[in-house]
Amino acid sequence: MLKFLCGVLLALGTVMSMVMAPNAQAASVLFLNPGNTTEAFWVSYSQFMHAAARDLGMDLRIEYSDRNSDTTIRQAREALQGSKRPDYLVFVNEQYIAPEILRLAQGSGVKLFIVNNALTPDQMGLLGARPGKYPDWIGSLVPNDEEGGYLMLKELIRLHGPVPPGQFIDLLAFSGLKITPSAQLRERGMRRALAEHPQVRLRQLVYGGWTRERAYEQARLLFKRYPQTSLVWTANDEMAFGVMRAFEESGGKPGKDALFGTINNSPAALHALLDNRLSVLLGGHFSLGGWAMVELHDFDEGIDISQYGGRDRQIPLLQVIDRAQAKRLLAMSTAANFGVDFHKLSAKGQPTSYRYPFSLQTLMH
Image (cartoon, rainbow, N blue to C red):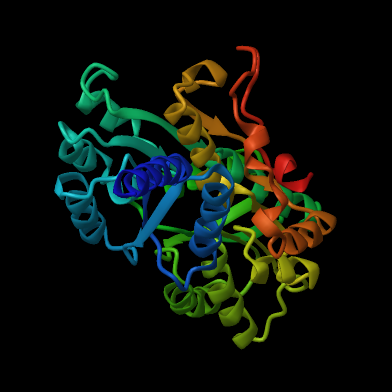
């Protein structure tokens, strides 16, 4: 009888281990989110990553740094040198922290993936050639930030319309942080559009640090200094709302007395576009983390992700969102897994001609 019971228990143990094996072996991912839990962009970014992780059967953990680069470095050190190391560490080169994380990761066995802000050309030059030096750095995904900054100003100028010869259109610009690559690239795109339109005068560019309150304080002064401002370019939606508040307090009406453009498809920004307070809105890059999860899932399955679009990729996610798309994005945010079947995007079993279809259009289907 005892032998029989032992046999039954052994068989049950074998069955249970077979049932539990997929969960026990789920790839673990830690994402170091540079934002905070009150920023709509970074919250939706995390939600989309979680949707991808659920669909793909991956174990995702997210830690926020509240825009403190020292906190991110500490989180990375604990993850890379602690006893419970993740299989994959996903992070942003916010405030140029990537080289330090690459250094901390050496010998840890943790695979690294960079999103949103990749290494700058200067950083790449200083670090030396890869993959020999950093074999655990497996890739990066970034949006078309320079083009996003360019498209925003081009569309604002188009909506404003022509001015008589000898007259000018006054522009104010609010960028993010000087030491964030995405802010630099968006600003560069804005200046490229500016060079094509000499009738537009950039009265002043300031760095609002991505925050609503700082941009509001800056805008209060700038609207007094430049009362003829009719175009406002902002590098993210939080700053846009701060600037619009200052504009309204000065007696102006956004969308009528001045045209506002920004980036991020937060629900508040989408509603502001539908209400005509925002005239130009670009978005779609909140999905980058979710797309990174697809690539990490494939890498974990032994797929050479570099065959399907390159190890380091820039995706044209930032596009001008029209009002019909804004309505669809609002509806999508409440759908299960954002209405995306992440498994279908995998390169598994695909020919080498396949390219990961990461785009705003993929979200819309």
